[in-house]
Image (cartoon, rainbow, N blue to C red):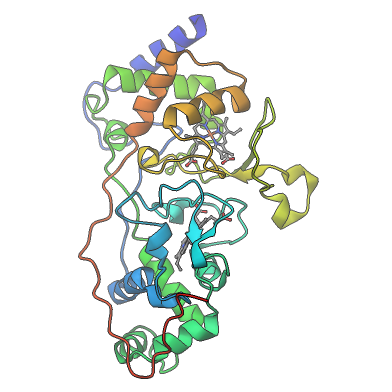
Length: 331
Ligand code: HEC
Ligand code: HEC
């Protein structure tokens, strides 16, 4: 209690009296708005993100599991894939995913472009093949014209598809959260309870892993540092990529940006509420039992990390042609 009091007192001193444009020196950094350098590529990527014809069933798009009306996730414990298959793992948000050091819970894709090829050909997700997806796109004259416009080439290949999707995803950042306003010097942007929550978050040590602009996404860490994480999920994390025993149960630290929207929590989706996730984190990662009041403060702080959600006109997708292979929704 004493230590916390001191930390909060220090925090209070560090709040500037007047608004300034230089962000405060804090472990969480502001999110910058996206700089769009190639609008035509982004527009094409947006269409592909929403196009269910990249799946075998003709029914599942990227947006099915990364619903941009739901904080870029599906709010399901684990996702539903082709043929109503139960997915093995919780769908992370695509919002601010460009800030991650790597993609997927175990970091098996280096970047967004590499990641985007995965779900199309994953039998448990979109269940297609890259060849068939290209075949579909090449049968749609408006897509052929758009790809020619952005690449200068007549042939479509999977690299062009994933590059366009990644360019769109890079625009899915959420600046302007209340926390960012506070970082920018607007000392009135947070309530006393929210500020107290940020104080607990820093003083307890959450920032050791949840830092940077994404408040996460900067490292792989063990789930269960002080005590093992008990779950029925067989997922073992980064050891699947490295084969190194050290990486067993190490996962990419998820971003906490927009976390109030992206329930349920953890790779297995086992924590239904943010309060539960905060309690588990305190206990397992830091050996700390929060009081109900502290948990409430941290949850209040985390809700200030919700930024301006991407907003745009829903893309109109070009119609299929006679040559387009029919979708196969049922086996
Ligand atoms: C059937 C549901 C489903 C579909 C469809 C789907 N995803 Fe995912 N996505 C997931 C799940 C589940 C994960 C986590 C998998 C893992 O980490 O092993 C994921 C991970 C990701 C990530 C990594 C985020 C991070 O923080 O690591 C990105 C980016 C992403 N998907 C983008 C896409 C794109 C682009 C498409 C369309 C081409 C797509 N997804 C289609 C369920 C889906
Ligand atoms: C040692 C590193 C570490 C520390 C310290 C830590 N976390 Fe985490 N955090 C993680 C990892 C790794 C995960 C993902 C665990 C998983 O899914 O199995 C995570 C997940 C979360 C999630 C769920 C996010 C989601 O989208 O599923 C929340 C919320 C969270 N942490 C909050 C906190 C809070 C609050 C604290 C301080 C009490 C904290 N964390 C301390 C590493 C850490």
